[in-house]
Image (cartoon, rainbow, N blue to C red):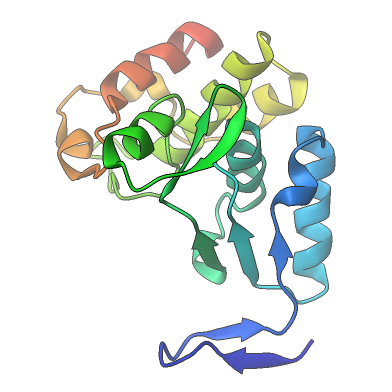
Length: 180
């Protein structure tokens, strides 16, 4: 893979990137496999234009534990409204479009209890979106060293979240889903 410097940022990106359009109709497993194949080929630049919740879930799972290795372009002035992609400068619409799912961005870290908040939220959101607990998601949750039940409800994570995610509530939702 060839790499270039991205403008004046000093960031090194692959000449070939991966866009998110291909993920709209993929299963979570196929989407993760596609991201892993791209990474295996040396791709480190991803375009996350699509605010559709399923696409965010796929990328979040695929990049879990290695987010710092990638450069992501995102279209934050977009929203997923009534099942459609919409470009907007109305920040109330943009914020509302991201309240159904956590951003998995890690702004909330570090957790005082040691919880990987982004991963817990991802796994809980995947279960909620599928109205079930897929075995693969349960397995990913089970290997977390600290589970959502360890949340002490201190609220420090919520104070750091630029999206206003109710993280303490999400931790309880995860406990309800996974039982710990």
